[in-house]
Image 1 (cartoon, rainbow, N blue to C red):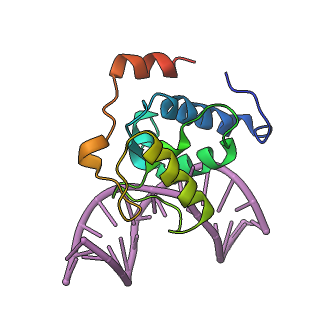
Image 2 (spheres, chains in turn red, orange, brown; image 1 turned 90 degrees about the vertical axis):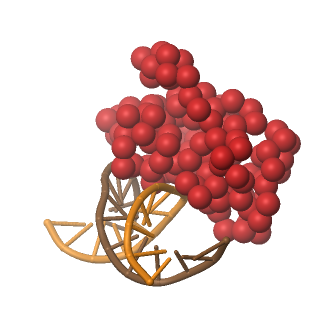
Length: 124
DNA sequence: AAGTTGACGTTAC
DNA sequence: AGTAACGCCAACT
């Protein structure tokens, strides 16, 4: 269970964020996923934008690998050169992921989730 | 209550 | 390969 700062009101949306966070947590080092992929896996098809929102309100505080989530094109979602984009690129590089022009080759490093693990994680 | 805003995705050039 | 035009949906004005 996640307890924390910016998540206080509107508990019905909170459940959505929980699902998203739990799913993102499963992405292993060296692999990445897209916002839409996370939404689908979390049982929230069509809500890719909500994934970005959820990651934004999380921050780094509870061990959430937010930097392993990219656009469906493989692009880092932040404006190139921005502080956040640079931080994300650095994190990816530190895991051995090749980043060229703020983009990775999804074909090489895209996460393929273990379904049993996913279902278990979403039980809570 | 209507309009705007995104850490998005797909399609059509 | 890059881009523009949509479509999308919860949150926020």
